[in-house]
Length: 114
Image 1 (cartoon, rainbow, N blue to C red):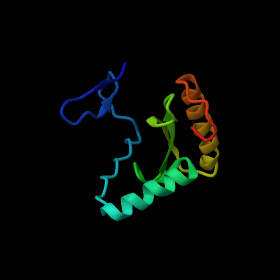
Image 2: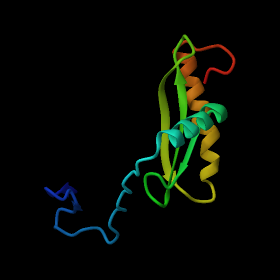
Image 3: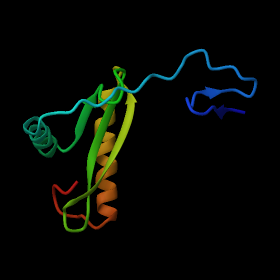
Image 4: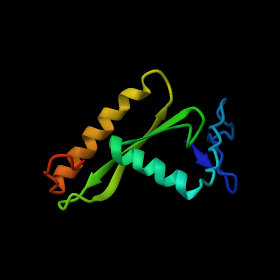
């Protein structure tokens, strides 16, 4: 049985031993200038997804796609974080398809809405 110790929240087994490999340390987000953020958001709007290698961890990739409501506006986003390896790019169409499915379930049926 696993437990977490306080305050460091490191995972230990019932015998007190830690796993051989420690979990990776998350990277701290760096503030970005507003103009750079606006440009990044415009790119996301244009391509229909966010593809973010190395934002959470240097060996991870984040992918997100918009979920739209019945009026076509973005109401949420569906996202995943996966290892950044040779097959990571293949996650993008899966996330976009899933987000379109959720959008349709919420009533978004127009072309280009999710």
